[in-house]
Length: 460
Image (cartoon, rainbow, N blue to C red; front, side, top):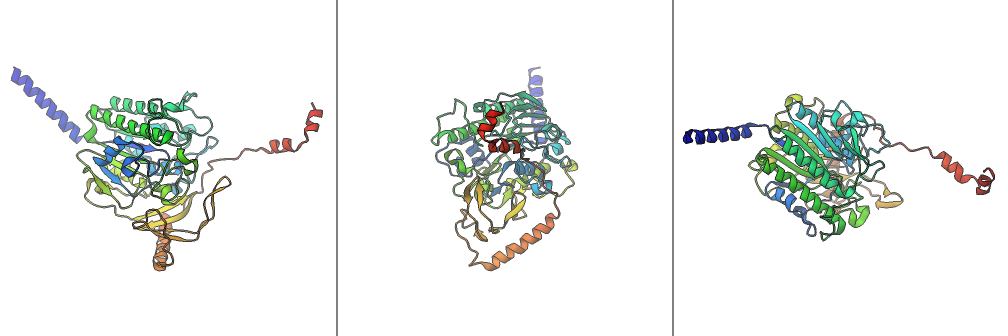
């Protein structure tokens, strides 16, 4: 009898292992907000401790030439979940609380594609693709949502659960912990079914906050504290996967929506060794840290230096999960980079267009990048990027974009301009930009200020 019981236990364990092996893989995408290229250890930071993110890279793959599709957040988020350049969606800039537009209903998000293939889907964190009901996550393929619908520096910061306001009191010190708890709960509650978990942190977008457990602990002040808490969050998510026996059947990707907001100095992060940061199409604005981890699938310690982008996540996830039948029929701009992750090949394409406010400001082909002539880029009255004529860089030799090679390589510049025109024809016609912010009518304030104070007192 004892042998029968032991035999049954072994059989059940074997069947469970086989079921886990043949189960559709889970997908976890973790997106930081305004995290700089030089702000985590595996990408060069020495004064911020990020052992969990570094561990993902050491036991997985680090992508050193990985791009967001915009130097600001809403277009990037649109591209990541649709696999399409945000210009195709008319999303050129950031949605504000006064916006009445959002992600177009005709787009098929990753969540919608996976949900059609039997996945549970959730997003915890910043959405920023429209905050009116029809644009919120639950109407775009997600089963669960908890978070702030836009940036944490905007008016009307609230927590939404699903489509409804959960709390109008948001203690920003605990934002990272709040999202982490929701993510861990979701993993535990859905351990027996395939899931797509999208964790979209508000940090380190200013204003930055860390919980008391992390405040004052790093060597780079409050900004470092914030990043170390984000790293803790990554560790909590990975530990939840391990605890529930899901680690070997889950792809984990960590990246950022764009580069650091340098105008905020020490609280804005660092893009070192890249040039410039958020709001610009220099490398510091759009080349972002990225690591991927999948034990048994991705060879530990892999480093990939060739071009890849967040546009690639959609087709890659679609391919890995066998969700082709629910894939959008609209043209995708990314590529399936499974061969890159698994060490069996390279990404096929090697071109990338740098958009800002819906306009192409630069173009990369292979190791070469050309920047079109530009006027001053301003933040208020301050010039953060001086005007410049055409710039040509070899990014393999000059990651910091310090040496303009236009005069010595005119033939290469001519070649890139011609390829850019081919790219534009391939993209074709795109929709008009969505109205993402509308100015208030303050004419009454101006009139009041023009009235002499004595006249106002006389009318009282």
